[in-house]
Image (cartoon, rainbow, N blue to C red; front, side):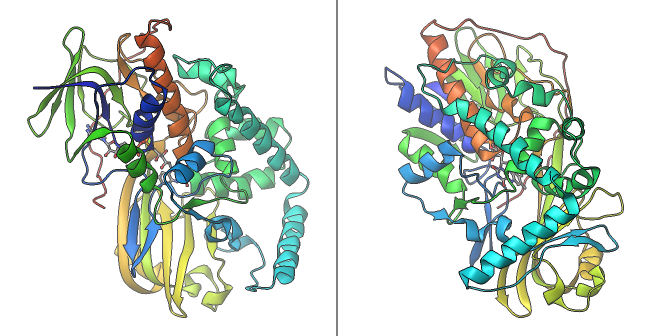
Amino acid sequence: QSTADVCIIGSGISGSSVAHFLRQYSPTPISQIRIFERHTVVGGRMATVTIAGETFEAGGTILHPKNYHALNFTHMLGLKVNGPSASESSMSLGIWDGDKFLFKTIDFDSKNQIVQYFVSLANSIRMLFRYGVSLLKMNNFVEVTVDNFLKYYESKESRPVFSNVEDMLKWADLYNLTTQTLEEELVGLKFSPLLIEELITVITRINYGQSVKISGLAGAVSLAGSGGDLWSVEGGNWQMAAGLINRSDVTLHLQEEISSVTNAGGFYELNSTNGNSYTCQITVVATPLDELDIQFTPEIYIPERKLQHTYTTFVRGLLNPAYFGLNAVSDLPELVGTIESSELPFTCVSVLKEHAANDFTYKLFSRQSLTDALLDQIFSIRNETIRINWGAYPHYHAPEEFAPFILDDKHLYYVNAFENAASTIETGAVAAENIARLILSRLSGQQPSRSYGLKSSTSDSNLQHPEL
Ligand SMILES: Cc1cc2nc3c(=O)[nH]c(=O)nc-3n(C[C@H](O)[C@H](O)[C@H](O)COP(=O)(O)OP(=O)(O)OC[C@H]3O[C@@H](n4cnc5c(N)ncnc54)[C@H](O)[C@@H]3O)c2cc1C
């Protein structure tokens, strides 16, 4: 048996950020931090695939210009930012209803900035014409939410440590948004039904694979992810997790899956499927528990939560314009979004790269796996296909129910309780920063402990893990 002060289950942005902030904030050195990762690589839902020698994001892709932890990590780790031009926000967009395009922006390839300006102006006017002034309300709705979220970057002196998600959200005036669906929220704000049914639905389907029935907060976050100046880390966002782990003096156990966590009185015993046993004073769960069967003794109780599965399919080849009722590939928008309809087999398809005139790399999102037969209808050429089934993010609803940050009234913590608010790379880091502070304040006896007697939930472990 080995001893450790802190054991973290999961090497994604949440687990790596907990390690980073613990090292940064702890007044006295923590003797050891272990991170357990069942896969061969770190990063979790930040992962890349390689096609034609190029890497593309397969999971968490876009970051918002005000995602300050991610920005700080990127700068601190000497990583490079992929600018907005490479993001989906500058793409031509079409809204497809399964039969026809309901709306298309103009696509005019030009390096000339003045031409670009007029194309973008023309597109804004077209959008305003179709969706009216509600479009401006949409910007305002997002701005207010983002501004509230910025409170989580305030100085530690004025910012409390939160022992549960509800208090954390209430403090930033974000909680109410989790009690209503996005649709209810926007109808209440008198948004035009067409804007909700089309553009906003397209966005929630792209970012969360779900309709406007998601909670208002997840919806606002999703809309924020459709604005301008979005960015990602050149070479892959997963490098943030790798870099944080590298510089936080962590003992990393790759390909080591934790199967049980037992409170053995004053410490936790973690057992792995490799047959190893570890002793930890503090245990942090930095992965969604919903589809895992980690055995907790004593049992823990968290509200039942379903994960939305998003099938990500990469295709190298050429889209078939006839599938979309068009004559030429050049008539197809770079990003085809879809409205909510059970007829539609995918939620979106976008061009990632044009290698040559008849050779593109595309990314599709769908709620079910796309069969070869279907892909052969959508594509006229298909040279390479990669499929990933992600247990991607919570299936959002309203009102949301939150699992506790402290699972057992002692030192067992759960970062991903915050995912019911919104699942993003940045919210993972924000929740992790709070958990690091919560651990340190409770260790020093400052914070009252809190536990919840919520209903038990059971879940099957039938998640298919992507082998990247
Ligand atoms: C397709 C897709 C698109 C997305 N798009 C965006 C986007 O554009 N922008 C954005 O900000 N966010 C996006 N997200 C969400 C974002 O990727 C996630 O919210 C974030 O990466 C979650 O990080 P995490 O560390 O909390 O969890 P994870 O990244 O899931 O990390 C958990 C880790 O724990 C490991 N693990 C699980 N169980 C065990 C065990 N028993 N023992 C050891 N290890 C274990 C897992 O293998 C995993 O590596 C997207 C997600 C998906 C799937």
